[in-house]
Image (cartoon, rainbow, N blue to C red):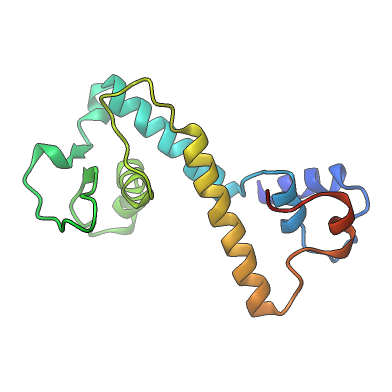
Length: 159
C-alpha cells in the first residue's frame, strides 16, 4: 500500500527525482502515511462500535475504565479503555487491544456519551503531526533536509 501511495505522490508531483524521498511531498499534500491511516480508520471504527454498541460480541471485548476502579494520578488522565496485558503477539495485535492502546494514547479526552462531538478532525491532525515528527526525526538522524528545494517554491510543507 505504501508503494502505491508513493506512486500516487510521484504522479501528483511529476518533478520528483527518482532517488528523492517522497515523504515531504506526501506531507505537503496533507496525506497520512499508510500506517497512520490504518490507525485513523481503526480508531474511528472502534469509536463507532463503542457509541452504537453494535455488534455486541465486538462491543463486549472493550472494557471502559469507568466500569472498574482504576487508580490514577490527578496529573494524568485515566485511560478510557482498560485491557489485560496480552501474553501472545496475536492478542497484542488484535483489534480491541490495538484500538484500546491507540485511544488511550490520544492527547485529548474522548467523551462517548456526547454524540455531537466529531473526533475525526482532531484525530487526523494528531496523526498527521505524528507523521511530521517522525519525518523530522528521520531527517535529523540521516542528516537530510526536511524540505527539498523543489518543494520550497511549490507548497508550504506545514500550515
